[in-house]
Image (cartoon, rainbow, N blue to C red; front, side, top):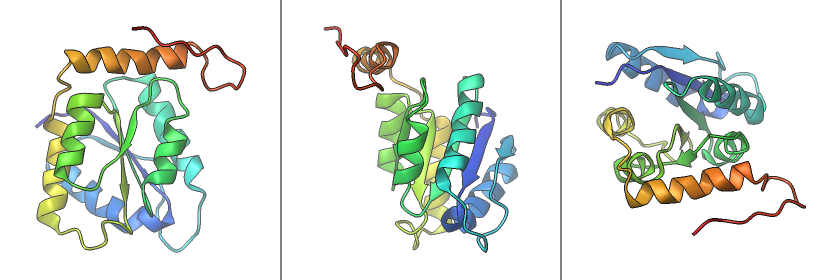
Length: 166
């Protein structure tokens, strides 16, 4: 199994699932940087956690992020504001595999409330898919390059000329 570092974070809604994920990763010997939270009892703002995970992944491309909130959506929206971050909300093994193989996703976002009935076997399979599925490149590289081009063109501002290459 891959030993790259996983930067892990959750808000209060995702804390219990994050704790399960951390236990599995550590049991497999995967290095984990847990940026919080440490309890489900105190409400926190998910953008704060997502931003910290995204910054750490930006700083070291050998890291991957894993974020958990109620749906995964808010975490993904926040993380994707950072250049070079490709955060994907995934709910099963197939979506995890496709996020890695086709989109070279570097941040996995999961919804604890969406996955409330997730058993340990399926969770482990999802995490293994995240760690073990390589980016396929090929035609997918062209598409990921278009995402990078949009970022470079400053398409996060309203007045930027956002041209995509063919």
